[in-house]
Structure formats: structure tokens, C-alpha cells
Length: 242
Image (cartoon, rainbow, N blue to C red; front, side, top):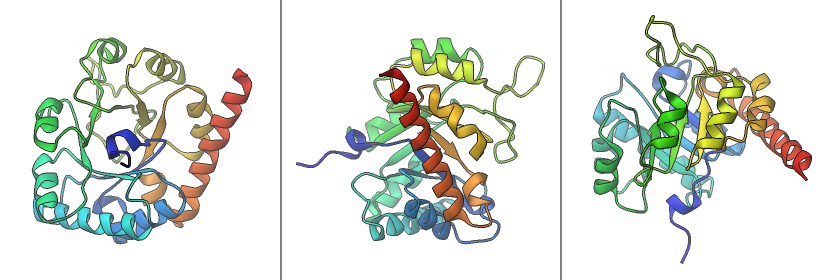
């Protein structure tokens, strides 16, 4: 028996993409480029696409993952839309799970509908982040998404403090987050190539990007630079610990 996607999950290089992020290029082209470069997880996210458009995007991404020969270990997720994942599966599309935020359908409900082998990710609360990650029940979820590292135009509604200022994360906070979390953590939000070495040193399990790949003039080149920098950063960190 091979591993389930939940067991094989690799969030080290995580692409988030929708039609509004691609500079007019097809989403599947960006997915293809990221897969060629070694990205390990794909999330389709769009606040503009209809349910049917989301299903079609999942279908195209699943085709690209299959064509690349990585269906067994690259997870394909939809942001927020449990209904879209269920419909896509009913239509024969290999959708592996869902990523939800704090105001979306609760992860335990997603788990109940999608089954034990599916992947369910959760955006960690922005306020009181460390306490939330340390204390929350993680039995229904496979990883936390955290951030933003910087202010980012692709998610202008990210967390704010009591004064309305956008909360961003320092590398020190991220290191503490990795230490207290019981499950893997992926960090994003404005992440660019120069951030990757420091992020790799924090102990988190991966980075997620939108514009750094989907908005790049050469998405495959940009994606490869990110993957190479992450792997080099991780290698340097593990070498330093020996």
C-alpha cells in the first residue's frame, strides 16, 4: 500500500494561485512551471471565480500534476471551498483537500466530509498567534498556514491589531511558532526570494507564495530559485546543528 496524501504531504514549497494572480496567463501554466521547478503543494484560491470556474481550475491543475508524474505526493487543495472539492471529486477530479480560514467551515466538518485520507489545512489566528497554535485542537488538521511575513496586495484582508494595523511576523516570532506547534507550519504573505534563507532557519516546514511565482516574468525560473534557496537554507541549518 502506498502512502495516503495526508501521510505524503509536503508543504515545503507551496504555491497559492488563482486567475487574478497570473498577469493574464492561464493558471495551469503557472502550476506547470511550479511543478517543473519542484514545488510540492498547490492551492487554488480565488475570491472572484464561481464554483464552476473553481472546479475547472482544480481539474486543470490536477491534469498538470498527473502529467508531471507527481500525483502521489503533490497535494492539490482548494481554498475555503469544501463544496468545490466535494463536487470536483464527484466529477472524477483528484482534489486532495481544502485549506480553510478562521471564518470558513470548521476543519472538523471538512474532515468529516472529506475523510481521513484528505488534507485539511488551517490559517492560524493572527492575533494571539502563539497561544492559539500551542493550545488549539489539531486532531482534524494537518498543517497551519501563518503570516504574513510582509504586507501583501494578494491578501489585503489579512489580520489586523486592535488599532487596525496589519500584523506582520518577525523571524523571531516564526521561530517560536515552529517550536510550539504540534503540527507542520507553512509561512507566507509577501515572501520573496531574499526572505527564504532566514525563513528556512526558523524551523518551519515550508513557505507559500502567490505573486513571487504567479506574477513573475518567468514563473519557472522564479519558482526554481525559491526551491533551491529553501533547500540550501535547510541544508545549511541541518549542517549547523550537527
